[in-house]
Length: 237
Image (cartoon, rainbow, N blue to C red):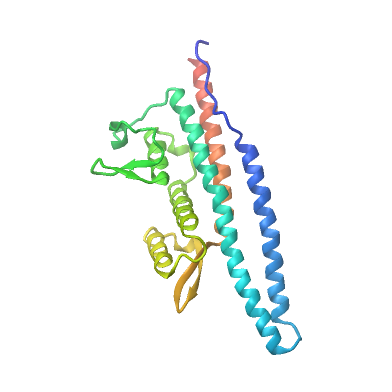
């Protein structure tokens, strides 16, 4: 064989194990806080004192849940971005080329993850949409989960919002974010606290956190299938 199949030089399995351990640890603490809140709520101590404790516990719990969301997205987004950085470089080195009549095929930035091309042929910034366009143009979209595009948008939109704005982003920024994801039908994946009837802090629901981790596992499995077929084709040819 004149040519060797190029494998990406990183360890997604080790990364996933590390992320899983941290998410599990956070979940244990979260469950403990929920138990404390219930115990305080139904305590037989002085009613006024218990009420103050309960209010404090609820406040702490809200901040903790948002902190969990920030911590998880700070793990998930780098895994996803890193995986595609490594894997797409390998696809390029293995001779994959754009297929079909896609606008991206006509650009000089085909392999650039952080951008996408709109219907007018203009270059736009967005790593989530950029990744999706590359995978679609390479003709390997079928190897990825059905919710591939939605999860990419969800992960990177929330990563940008959470890590650039912090806990209390302000009512306008929180509302703008919820309106933006709402226009994409993704509001159901988040919870938010309110102040004066307006959103203040935004976090991911527990189900969303689990979906994000499952998505990371499926990305790894998708690339494993692509490599298996690519290696098989190279041997046969």
